[in-house]
Length: 385
Image 1 (cartoon, rainbow, N blue to C red):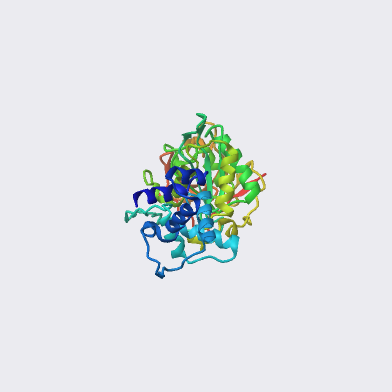
Image 2 (image 1 turned 60 degrees about the vertical axis):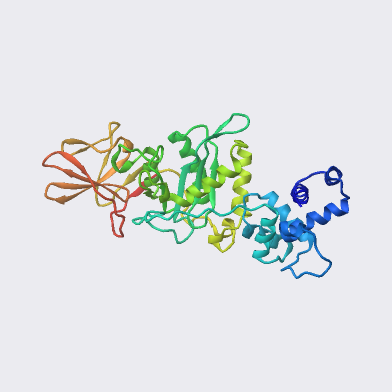
């Protein structure tokens, strides 16, 4: 019995079936019989059987089972449900989901699902929007680096549409500098239009931990384009959990095999247009995603503030107002802010739709806002091109 099990398991993966049969001293006919029994009924099917008929649930055609196994080998990290959807797309109909689970399990091609630990904070971004349509929220991060078999380092930039799960970019960049990442986003905006908001972590170049509101040169540019900013809490990757889940898939399926851009492009193509997602009703992200209606018209030279005073931030991050000079942020250097006197010697300071804080004329100082709600009716800026 042990030899039969050993043979049948090897038979599922061998490239020379007859040589394997000769090694075990059996005919090819017997070898095929044992292999098919394993596929149909699992290990129990290799035991001695009487000639009386047996009633086994859903006895599938061996060709169907072999096709299941072939598809699973092509997509080793897909579960039985995704394999069944792929089979149905290719052949028009498919056995039940339970049959796929049972057959792939008997072939030793499934893994038990790990139980997830639940937390009250898991996935919590209570103060932020939840995407209800494509391009409402894009999420962005750098995948943790790895070395491929040629000792090439790869740390790709990943950009994803939250609603549709569509991977907008999976790009190996020369570095993570602001200008490099900005050029990548310019190409994305030209191809897909502008999102309503971008969610990132608090790391460079997306944020600057010591700056007002964590503003970096890159995130300031996003604000100038009319894109709202969202960030997870420091040390809480679960705030961008779906993006991290995608990173785990990349890690399993690409590391450490390759760092070539062609391989990253192929993975993105499969993820977007071939791999079904349970959260999308087993549709592919490419069936849900659509280009944004907000077209990218290039980067504005500056922002104008109708109804407010406009002052430019100098190279030191300072603004001059009523004879005094106050520090705001070096991330805003070269951009204009809007100033709106509100009484009591205070002046609201705006950048785009973001209230930065107040200038206090009596103390000649700037006080940053404690929060940044974005509500309808707030002062609007206009791009200067």
